[in-house]
Image (cartoon, rainbow, N blue to C red; front, top):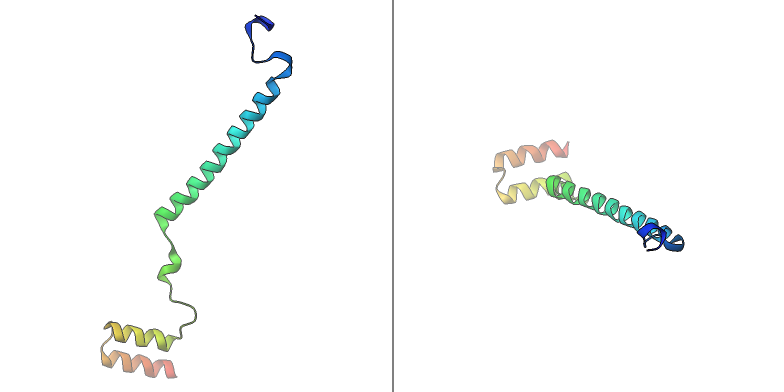
Length: 85
């Protein structure tokens, strides 16, 4: 037996074990951060989907709502007048 039975630390080889340990710790941190982002997306989802597209005018959004049947004709005309000023 060399060095009291410890064959891992012969001739300064423990430096490589330290490098392996640091890499292992770095990989664990990266996985923890990526996992946190994945959980955040899973719980809260993509909020940009619920927002209207920025290139649509209020009148276009109103017309889409009327076409979907969200508004009756009277509410559509009243809101259209309000938007016109």
